[in-house]
Length: 152
Image 1 (cartoon, helix red, strand yellow):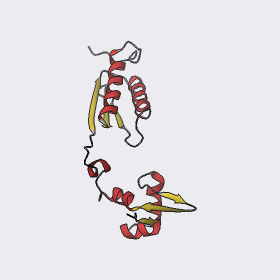
Image 2 (cartoon, rainbow, N blue to C red):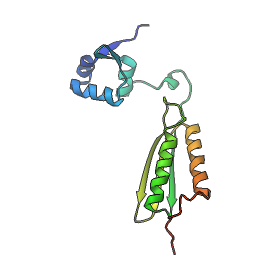
Image 3 (spheres, one colour):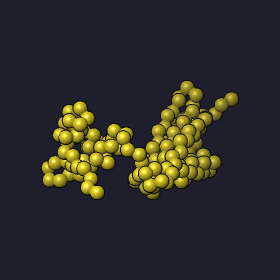
């Protein structure tokens, strides 16, 4: 079966977008494309993935796809400790995992409540590994919270 391949101009016409917008999607990684010479070529499957018309490969193959959403709340931390923990979590999320299924992590610090929230989205195993790391850091005597806020 031959796969359909489109130029940037054809994709722009199909989607009703400007050519520059399509190129921006390609450069940002939002639309997968192959560069041949000075031109990009986009596979039908990648175009369908951008527009949401296709099902994930695991679903097509009959396998299940699992994604975990987790929110970790850490109370009693100051800004410096939250920054250190956030850096550690983001660094861990960006290493040693499957690049095809990256972990997505957001951190939020609330200064009024001395509270940090860590939102993790990703594969179950990678999320579990990251949660174990957070648990070890928070339970350990590692000096991360040397400046932690004390509540009366």
